[in-house]
Length: 336
Image (cartoon, rainbow, N blue to C red; front, top):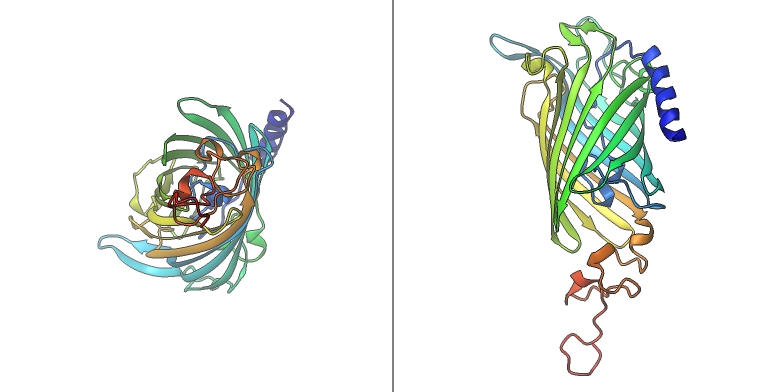
């Protein structure tokens, strides 16, 4: 109960200092720290992490034309406000309770270039983007897992460059739902971003509704593939203006190097001419972490999938998915 009261208190502060949004933010790729622990890059699971689970990760991301000013009739590019951008996201997550975990995302612009807005300065080459604090509270566990993620965004990006963040604290309530069927999982996130109404270069910067939808499939004990779709639109004119409706699709894979280290990589592209839909993006990262008490032998096979929870799998190419060591693969009585 105290956590809910704290969330409500901070939310009220954020609403009272709602983002002035006199800037255009180029970051539409909002990473989920738990992507290195069996979740999707931008879609949170409705299930919270196991208590005492943790992850520390770095994700690198290159995107071509992530912030573009379009003119219609006919469609043409008026300005690549940001033409090239390389970012690095420092990601941290920790399972506090069985029904509560928290994440932190610190995005850094390592390099960017572009034309900037008409009659305005060009974007800075590097800097820090808005920091996101990501508490997750489990609401329901059953046929479908549900969670609330009351995201809090700190205006650190504006200190470096008007294209790296929005002015003022932001509160972005997000509802996450997910479901797993064996090796297949799917998830849906819906959020609402509250900002002060304004306009920049003909673009309306108003309240937004966003969605992220994805699915993953574990094709081998160490390999999972995923696909995802995400975007946002004006709350007052849903899908009314394509330029105000950046949508993106991406595919990728996750590979578990060891029980503690995981690689994630993929590529994506904008599927509309929304102002933050890039021509394409490429991302890759590495994470270090462990899944609480669901993997006591630390072999990277969790829960019911591990038939020998106190004996680590030997990963010798023979029945590696059952979590049990296989000292005599051919059964001839002679240890391999």
